Image (tube, rainbow, N blue to C red; front, side):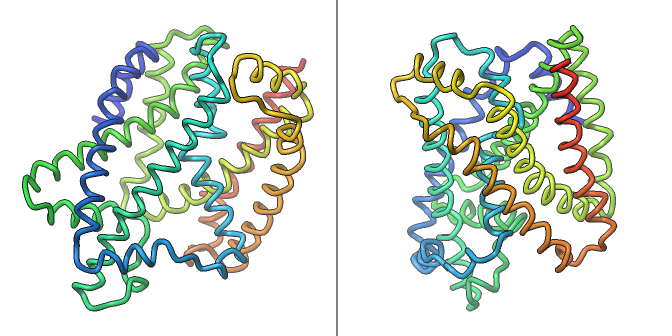
Length: 334
């Protein structure tokens, strides 16, 4: 409840208040990450963890699920296929450098993720050494990273560990709020633009719906539902929306005009290869990944969950996204 109230208070006056919030919430975790990376690399066993991190296992590339997870992570991390970038772009000046901003955001995101890998695996190497086990046996995934690896790194700081611990969990909270309001803003902006619902009212409606919908995750089986929904919405859902956007902008809109506009206002020019990527290469790759990964999930039963939970929590929401996208597109064309 407190989190949803916080999101409402941040959003109801629009993006100006969001800008004031992220000025604080973005630099704090980055500074903390750099400090933890430096400390992690000085721990015993850190080099083993870093070696594990940087040593590729090419056999994993044969699994479609790995590729889909990688695409989904990039989509989520860069806020692609969620309407966020489109919404925030509407507040840019008309002559803002689109291509340059895209390159900067992508490189900054990739660089931060790469740096975080050193933080995590240096501590994982230390934990493996201290417990006398292999890195593979630690189960490096999900909540383990957040609630074991980072707290361990913080507790091993030579000074002010308690202060940095408080800072870490505050940063974690702000990350959650940042992610939430960036996902809610496109919906409220759409309601305000299409049906002229006031910003405060549309934000209140969405926050209330979000609160009640999220109650299922607080039940005894909440973590299982969270895992299923996160897996299918984050992996399949975002990629499916990305595929839909490629089809819509590649075939139903004049892609040439989008490219020409970007080149007009940008220092870095994009050529016709961009058209080929949007219309052919990316859609084909995403379709193959979706079918291969869906087949793997059905035949192997994701995480051992019953098939009906996967259908309700995963496949149906993804199909709903696809159907609603084309319904809205047809309505707009009429």
